Image (tube, rainbow, N blue to C red):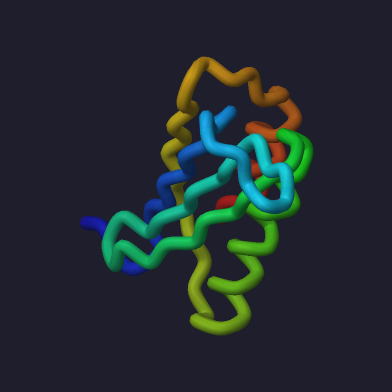
Length: 94
């Protein structure tokens, strides 16, 4: 059974053909599978992805009082994410 913030879908995508105003080349889209609550982070480098994920997790824990337990990662355009990112995200999940 899927509950609120039990499953988070992370979509990491890169280079957009459209230039952004702050030179962002990547994006991280986080969505709750149950409520469809969504945050989109525009990133200038792939290394910002982990801090954005932690920020999202902090918002959910502090403002809503819930912890998510599972995540699904979708990578657009075959971008390499470091194994450290995946291991750290997995370790943050309850």
